[in-house]
Amino acid sequence: IKREKVVNILQSTVFNREITVLGWVKTFRNNQFIALNDGSCMSNIQIVVDFANTSEDILKKITTGAAISITGQLVESLGKGQSVEVKATAIEILGESDAEKFPLQPKKHSLEFLREIAHLRFRTQTFNAVFKIRHKLAFAVHQFFNDKGFVYLHTPIITASDAEGAGEMFRVTTLDFDATPRNEDNSINYKEDFFGRSANLTVSGQLEAELGAMALGEVYTFGPTFRAENSNTTRHLAEFWMIEPEVAFADLEDNMNLAEDLLKYVIKYAINHCPEELAFLTNRLAEEEKNKPQAERSDLDLMAKLQFCLDNNFERLTYTEAIEILKRSKPNQKKQFKYLIDEWGADLQSEHERYLVEKHFKKPVILTDYPADIKSFYMRMNEPDEQGRKTVRAMDILFPGIGEMVGGSQREERLDYLKTRMGEMHIPEDELYWYLDTRKFGTAPHAGFGLGFERLVLFVTGMTNIRDVIPFPRFPKNAEF
Ligand code: 4AD
Ligand code: MG
Image (tube, rainbow, N blue to C red; front, top):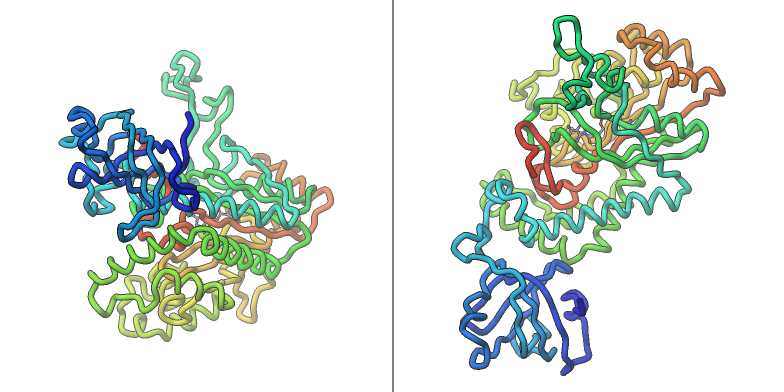
């Protein structure tokens, strides 16, 4: 189909020529002006309809949501707010849209309402902006790693291992009833229902990425991961995308530097490549802020927040140092935290993480060296401290408004330490023999992390619910579209 995209038409400087443009009607004013959008950019193009020479039948079908084709003259516009417009000479209705029934009337809809019509919310400016930025961020991630010589390693979605050892997995099973292995009482034998063995959807590609790193040197995965946690929060999904680099001959400090560089690179990329979308979302957020009580309003707008993140080094401190800060903090002293911090060893809740980044340091924070007991089996063990407390070379990166954005560590490369840890955590060695092999044959220090892609998109777009930054959110009771 011969057509020109709105994004190009709006920048055109060659006027008084015939063009064809296809798109969806946003509004139709006074039987004369159509605002048309084709998704190529956030802006609409104005179409001027020749009322006298257009049939009654066509006019009544130019309704919000209808898909139409316009052929006409591209002219400079004298109207306010647009530089060009198209004087229509021929209008074709491609797909009608019943004005009474179309849920997206040209007015402001709440995000809650749009979530219920997630199959149509793509047509709004907000979601146009969010998903364009999501795309650019994904592209920037690949650009960043490609420029550094990393290899994009595709790790499996179906796997037998639980990379986090947390048991939050979805099982993969066949629907072929007759082919499904049975126990003696005829119930399904879940230990064998993946053609003779058990399998799950992956929670992380890390363990496989480690295999890649121990040969290719620097790899990353970027794919969907699944968590069977029944959480209904604004930060959790059952299916989310994770970016997981893994680097041989690297320690925790290299890991922190890589993560900070990556985050700054992709945020900067979005600022440079999505000015229209970010300006729109900055305004959207500013409007929302106005509805909040004064005390809760942010003093920085979205663009300023992103810029601030680029201009400052992330604060780096240990878990132990953070606990001291939290213990002495006002909300802890005044018992305002839901979970009070009274002893070393407690896992940090999001209220504590947010206190550190939003109130105390007021910038992204990297917390390291967590207690071994609250972290995964594969993290490298530190020497016990003076008080005999055991910590691991873990790092979490915490972001304002988000909480945990990144989780990672230097890996335990010493076979004996790793086996001891797995034993303590009841992880059978035979299930991970292939993982242990990397420690038997040419083991080397290495490190990596996982960046939750939706949490990154949340931060960059200023949206507040993770269900609004992935096209098809998966959360408890939601898998339809
Ligand atoms: O901290 P997590 O569980 O770490 C891992 O999976 C490691 N294997 C990563 C690695 O070292 N290669 O998850 C990493 C990040 C979190 O910091 C968070 O941003 C995101 O993944 N995340 C989620 N995002 C959305 N919904 C969920 N349910 C998430 N769980 C984790
Ligand atoms: Mg984590």
